[in-house]
Image 1 (tube, rainbow, N blue to C red):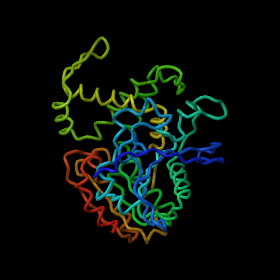
Image 2: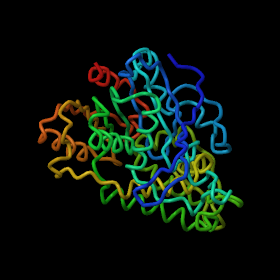
Image 3: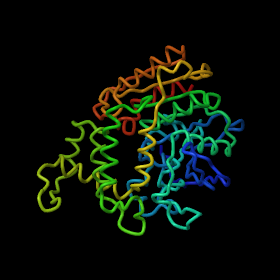
Image 4: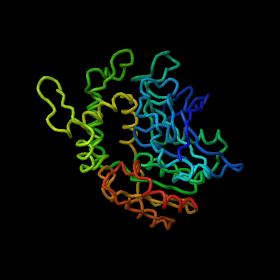
Length: 373
């Protein structure tokens, strides 16, 4: 059952907000959505942390968000985790109050490079400061404070959202009871760094990028298109990619003067990149990518899970994942076991690769329901 029509809300921090970089925002806005009802003692809240290019719109139908056009395309209208959130679903809104916020630095209503810099009256663009993962978590904790939530029943997220969920749980153990990271890791691997760097260069080398100050001209869509092609091959298994290409995309079209698409897989990848370039902002992509490049929770750190003994962990791996390989989740589990934590590790068998956590709720829901109690 779907939760139906929803609207994005806006939380404002109307005082200086300092960043790890040493820079400070005069004010900060977070775009967020909630689903379900917060109980009287505010103990049934679940925070969902989205992946790299996700939004605050995790469930239901949201036709538009003020100030976000033209990025709010048809692809954004249905919540990205709609199959997981709602009455009777994995995150059951008859029982839980679910919150999801767009990251600081994002492009879907939270303060980001597209936002107007109050000091100049123009979009931040190249002047938007570096944002760390901890900056993102601290801003969302301020949102939770405003909602009267002292301790989350659970925090969850896949991919980058899983990394941030562990960061919140270890830095602020008193703020969460259950931790459910999906297809994620404790650190940025060498493979991540290479893939991410390729994407960063793809955007920065687009002539329309203009050093990040392109908002009054044509945005660097070609760079974003290429960045998405580079990343997409790690999100979807090759078998599924080939199947989708045969089923969905058959159009051949030229790329410049010297090459014409000659295979459905090329057409499929080009189509995916083009769709993405319509719905995301290049500067936000670079800022969030930079946050990922700098992320590191050391599994060998002896006090990583200090004061976390009350927490329960449910770690999900996807056996066909080539973005966050299953070995990365095994590192998390070993660290938790060494700290004598309550941890369960589930390997999901799927042919859909990393994106399984977005597409196959039936493979996750029984375990999520069990751990949430």
